[in-house]
Image 1 (spheres, rainbow, N blue to C red):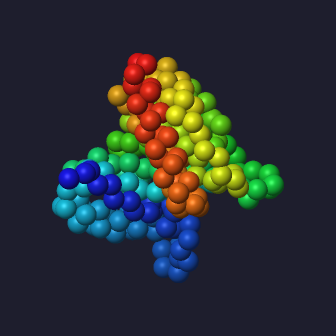
Image 2 (cartoon, rainbow, N blue to C red):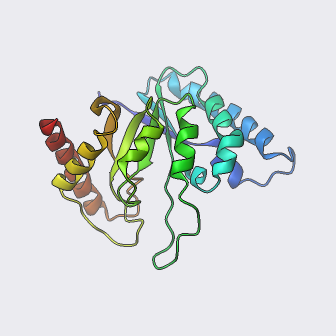
Image 3 (cartoon, helix red, strand yellow):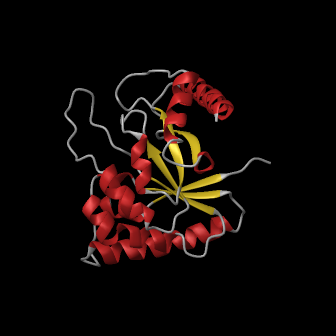
Amino acid sequence: SRPVKVTLPGPMTVVDSTLDEFYGDERLLALAVADALNEEARALDALGPAVIQFDEPVFSRYPDKVAEWGIEALDRCIEGLNAKTCVHVCYSYPMPGVPRPIVDAYPNILGELERSKVDQLALEFEASGLGPDLLTLCPSKTILFGCIDNGALGFERIETAQQVADRLLAAAEYMAPNQIQVAPDCGLVPLDPAVARHKLKVMVEGARLARGRL
């Protein structure tokens, strides 16, 4: 049987889309949501998944909140889990032709994520154009290193296996290769299914090429 990853929304992302008429405090609401997510995660964990991932796209929008209570809430989500744990932080992109409306938060939040208890960070490096030197901010984590984009920039571009390999080898200059896993930037739902499948094949071939050069 193949390893299974389960994905759940993160507490800050839930809070960001929830009307609070009870707590009156974002942190308290986030911790309550985290406890509920932890209950769900424990039930899923009992089924034996390899990884339980929490998606926190809004971490990029609110780096100050990440430091204030985002990491605390994230850590509450993973208490008592046996599976490997992961958090995916979208880099976030504007609509085509629209200037980027938010700060480049990765340099700020990766240090915060380093102090979290999650095992893995799923990060976007392809479409963002960010350099792998940022990996020095989270040296203890396993990194799902985004090497293919998901069409978020408004067009379909298929990378080559050599491009993927070069990205992975550049990352390996800043982190041990066994801490780096090849991955798409984000979910591939925006893409035509045939394009998505082709990108995944390129990604796998790029990882094979990179291994052969290490």
